Image (cartoon, rainbow, N blue to C red; front, side):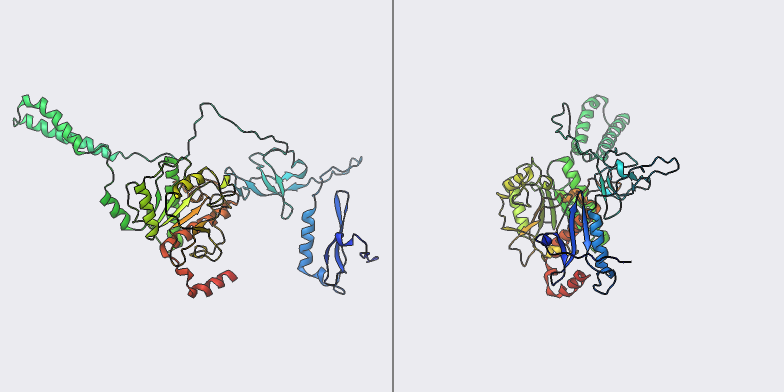
Length: 467
């Protein structure tokens, strides 16, 4: 039974207390702070005689927004001296999203326990109660890994410490050593046979044995490099993604693992079936066999010779596409080339000063890169927030250079068991999927050009955007 009607009386501070009003200015929702909380009034009837707001979904959404502003329940025992009275039920928060060992917010494991609201600020995280978000949306509460008064200090220099990556350098091929031993044994066997049959005098054996050993070792080079013709045949037999070898064994292994994973994704999701990725050295290898190159920039990047820089410049001008990744968006400061001004970006500037680079711009909305396969708005990698830069003058042709700072290889790379090598921050698996889609778009852009800019594709793209 409604016994009283509450109206918002006109006052000087009514406008400040009004959260929602009708078109004629009548206050619909007013609020006033009282102590540590708020008193919020809805000035409407419970039926549709004056307004249909209580019967609409908007009313439910408004209530949910208000409840989300509440500080939450306070779990306290009941204040009673009766021995038969039950204490207040302890408020428990169910796990919603928890942090895994890679620092990613994931779904909680089945054995994750709920946490009491009263111990949320003082509890200690553990295997059964990992840090993360507990509760139900929109009332999520954070269970932090560290207390609020934790004092974080720099670790400083650690004596006798070495920085090593999880990825080991390339394996040593043992087949050449076995072939060398087999060749030497074959020559020794032939020499012994000549001596035993009398076709070779016993006095000549001490002289001929060292000669045969030298000939055998000389006929099989210890460091057998891949012949340029064989490499050209391998590179042209199928289309391969390639990365520029930096000289850093760990960084090169990450690039290879990333392109291997991206090649497998391209095979599953598109009609393009690339071969195994290949490493190229601009100092001695030809770049013309590869439509796409990934070039990670390191802080201690070696200076390229003028001949190597000329190869890279010719590659970009003749239709190839290079994705240059500074990988330093996590330490980004405002500046050019992906919005970062870190040590890797400084090394990149030293390289670009020696190349004939056209004016660059951030990839704008509607660019071919945003719709070459997936419809995308940005291009995240392991990090998020860095812009992707491209050739400003590449209107009717494929841009020869793309520059980013989001560490794309770090988001693509998997190990031999299919596990992701690095966490993706801060978006977790959603961001990783966007990074994979960014890689697919970039590769298909390098392969197919700007045909998606043709107006014949506009109806299909608009239909997908409407979905």
